[in-house]
Length: 426
Ligand SMILES: O=C(O)C1=C[C@@H](OP(=O)(O)O)[C@@H](O)[C@H](O)C1
Ligand SMILES: C=C(OP(=O)(O)O)C(=O)O
Image (cartoon, rainbow, N blue to C red; front, side, top):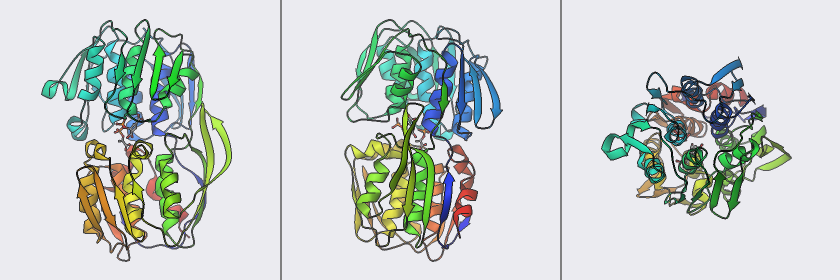
């Protein structure tokens, strides 16, 4: 895919449904009683893997359209042993949430995924689940997939997680559903809270206090309608593109603005590109708004670290592109988590943005980016959807354009991204 500096981006549009919320709607729908109707479901590679896994576990999922699913729930004890290995593809959320869900189901299952998934750390979910009594084996002493889960009766715990990870928190809470009593997780900083919100919406007793989220086991989960908000992590690419390309003016309608996800808006404001939230409302127990953005000449560098990191963890690749185009220095710290995503995103960003002419220093836990612009050239997405889209945005402002190798990976979270971007250019 080759992108070159374009005319202004203009238009009103929507982005596909939120990936995190789409996964959770299918999983909770499958273990609830009755029917769960999901609209604006994200038909991206990752969420389709969750659907296939839940079907292999006995859930019935009717595809009314690619974005409209009807899930007939099996109840908390109604899933069945899958006949084959569960393949999560590229999706960390799927493998970690399902490992938690399956730890307390009375059958055997094996979870694996692509080469990227098999490199990513799984001990972070295996350890707390083992504390709950789970029997899970994996490569490298349970640190890497494939994971083999012999489901059994669990006991509730209060887990103090060393990482601010919604996947870890959700795995433990989902395991906690299967046992009597309250299961709690305390995090070092707030991570996205979609699981807690949706569990409460399905009828579970959820307690939240500061950095602790807890759920009472053996709930009566009732199927719901879930109208999935647009994904702010997908909107982020268009927000940055519009902020960078002179003369742009874009409205992205119906985007989820859960405060655990809006770090990107805080950083864009600090850089000098304020995004206006219009028409605030609620959908699926989540705050939603239309995002109005226009080009902001003379963006400034920013400091990005601490508790902000979990609130924009997936947006750092595109923020790094904004930082290259800005004036001054951007420092990203406390972001070592990026090394264990679909790719080592710190190393990949330093290498690829460097190839495009940026001055980027790689640190163990972040990046130092000296602004002043990009030249352009060829860059490699490292099989990572967020890298591919961020490099595409870079192409809109690099004088020589950018040729993105591995552009097809965008389907994981934002199918149709290249057409959506092209459709905005005037
Ligand atoms: O729970 C989720 O839906 C997600 C949590 C985050 O990962 P971590 O929990 O590993 O931080 C995020 O990066 C991922 O894209 C989706
Ligand atoms: C890290 C991501 O997803 P996951 O962990 O589900 O693979 C992402 O979408 O950027």
